[in-house]
Amino acid sequence: MATEPQDVKRIDLADEAALREWARKFDATPEQLHEAVAAVGDHPDDVEMHLKGSRSSSNSERVARQG
Figure (cartoon, rainbow, N blue to C red):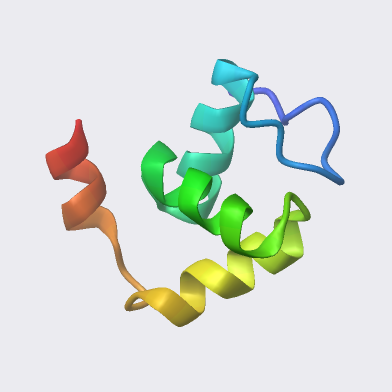
């Protein structure tokens, strides 16, 4: 069972386990999360809206290619 990130109000890019969990939650790669946080900050709602606006609703193929 996956655990929720410790501080659900912020995305901590330094925490590898939390980064993987956020990436899974948003169907994004860790690199996409880094780019989104750099663009809009570490608030999950802002990051989610940024990711949705910057790509199609499905990103599974790109995530799968990233491994």
